[in-house]
Image 1 (cartoon, one colour):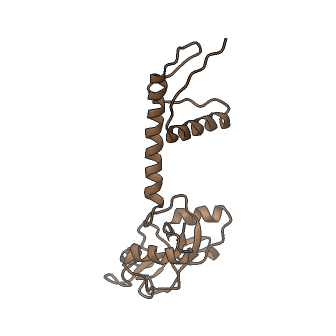
Image 2 (cartoon, one colour; image 1 turned 180 degrees about the horizontal axis):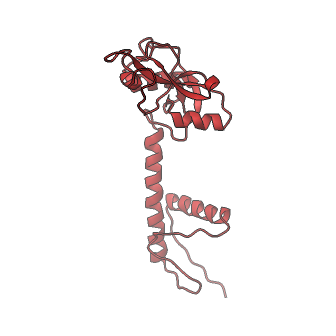
Image 3 (cartoon, rainbow, N blue to C red; image 1 turned 90 degrees about the vertical axis):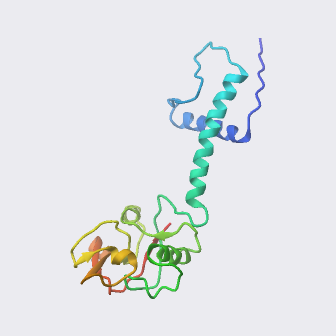
Length: 199
């Protein structure tokens, strides 16, 4: 006996089904689909409604993932899982010699977009991204990076007051990456280093 069942599936739902099927194959069939409206076991009757409900649920989840990815990688976005991609010209910690518009991190990002072949998601590297680059064997330069942390190695470290100043109530320092020293260090904001860029 042959039974033929026809379903109408949206292109996005087809894509979601392919992703789920591929995951099941990769994981040896051990994938559990949680959160769909209907689950089935051997011998259960199928209906177009229950299948369409599941496809709609998957479609909505894929749409959320696509929207999130588009937000991250659209013009002016910010790449995730980034690694070192280049560096700017040398500049003091206030980024005063960079000719890009904006100030602070915004200016650094604009300069990194330019330094990394006009990639709109390039930005000033973070410490985690430089650590990732080192672990992957990617050679980086020596330069400013965004540590997102406070230290007092060379006076108050405000990341050069958000990369906008070389002074702040005395000596102000910023974080820079020095592969020769094994990674992060700090320097007076009057020092001149490139901004290290990741994408």
